[in-house]
Image (tube, rainbow, N blue to C red; front, side, top):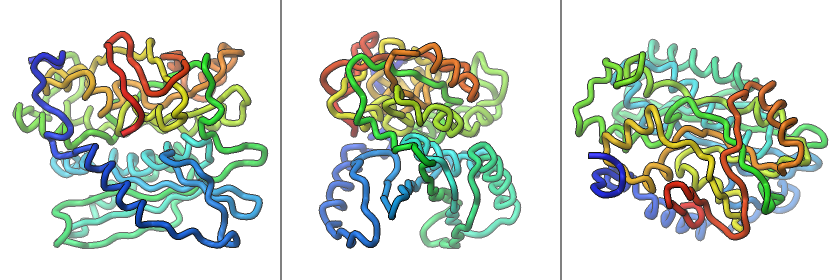
Length: 352
């Protein structure tokens, strides 16, 4: 049964993640948090719904974000392979800093576990080391809690802090205008999003993780645990350019993440790649509708740069020198709001 919308079998809500309930819960929480500190404690920068929170302290602006690897850790536990999720603990955070143009400075990890296992911790540490090197970020501390009454396995995440070098302002998307182009930088797979849905589909179909899927050269388990791409060098290369108006980290929420940048812009993704590889495979295996697929996974593009079309060739060359020779134009901006995939007849109104 395919994922063409005629016979949908799976959705994120059916797998246990109801986006509407999450959104409702967050709104309820924020309604109760009304305290505003005095100016001497710093001035928060108003960028609701953005990838990282920012605060102005004196003459400096600090960006901060926190995230976890999610249920990808359950596959790591099943396969006894932890390095990839260790790297992911860094990438899910530094990529959110990169999405506002901040340079990562420091990271602290958080590990919740039912019992401490030195071999698991050693493997996680090797992955964290790789992520820190790729993003030029320092580990300055962390927290380990043994809480067997709360978790059965190991939960992994962290918090990262970044700053803005002299003459670089936060890139918030407010300057995005009609006629801008959307440049996409490919992902390395699912990154660390949608694994609750992925795992449900794998369980239902009794998939053998030790064997490659059709068309692949490595085992499915290896593919699924491949760490996400770190986009910090991409952001660092172009964040200060006047023609660059916005960044988007395409994580949970899929293409709808673009709506977080500017509610007055309509992102028309007429060059976004059709699902292939792992994305096509999971869509067909789970009978996922296109609407579900594109708002759950990155579907092949993990980071986007929104820029004026002037000097586009020079911008692409700069991205190539920063390690993104695979960057390409995947859409443009029009008047209105939301995100549209015209080739699929799919449209989303806002971010959920």
